[in-house]
Length: 476
Image (cartoon, rainbow, N blue to C red):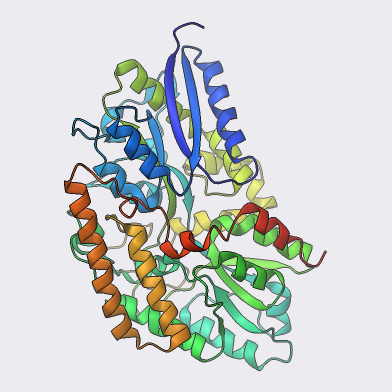
């Protein structure tokens, strides 16, 4: 068809097998339903994606839709075109209360509450959640039973007790537990305790201007983590974040437990099968000495370009709704194990028996949609734990600062409070630098728009699909 309306969609290429192929297939399927549109999907480098979008915006060629990693959500909101106008607009505002767009059902009210909450400000959904993950604990069930344990630990105290029991067992591996020194686990530990990283309620009741990495919630987590390490229970590889190293330790049965992302479920299950042991998956343990408040989520969301014009905007919105239609979203979950993002897609998977056949895949959704059994809820809690993670500039830089501080505490014996006070000063300087960049024509610097920790970037992506495939095959 001649003169089709072009909807350009930029996404980070995560390099997982088939990742971009699925994007191209989804675009082609949408075009068959809506032949008046051409959806042009462009895969971009994960590390430099936000900078490329910012550069394009400054030149007046920003894409209609752009998928941003959650660390860079504030950078996307602050991004400006060459004429000084905002690059992106509010998704909910653009939908204007409609229930369908070009025949595609609007799904905003069906998005899982924790994902909707994270990408909302003042109750308004700013961008469309597109990938959702949270933190889980995985266990080698064979080693767990060999060490005399029958259940996954639910709390920090229960995990302490499990580690002590494992350490005393003749069947013990090298370490009871390991996890990557990565910001996502700090975020989950703080969220469960109601702790914050920055002021103005984590940047949700006003722009964040002040960082605090020495809060009671933070120091409680750091001290508990340090004690596990000091007692010889926690495997620290002295690399940041070393996803591959901690995964390798689990695959080679050097640890009983590993805390990691819910998106690792496919690789973790494959590693267990390849190396001859059973696996068990549960909620990330929490501090039971305080009321349970919420959960941290991670992932990506898709931003809508402002000023597209009615036809192009409706096409872009319709494509987003198509991506989240029940069948498409359910199939996407099956392909990559990220959380199904709507209740309708979750129901499709349930009705088809997917979760019955793959019980590990439902744990992440259960985690973010319900309080742990037996947990004391914070006063005024609703039926679903809060998911009001931080939103502020150079979020990734902040995480780099705290993981390096934790590395010094674990490997070099630094005093936790002193070291995290120093980290607070470092992180504050990064936030101040972001605001200076933002006020000078919108964020454009690499530091303002980085998508992951400096330590990760400096070391190279240590968690590539190829690496994992090799590790999965250990023992074959």
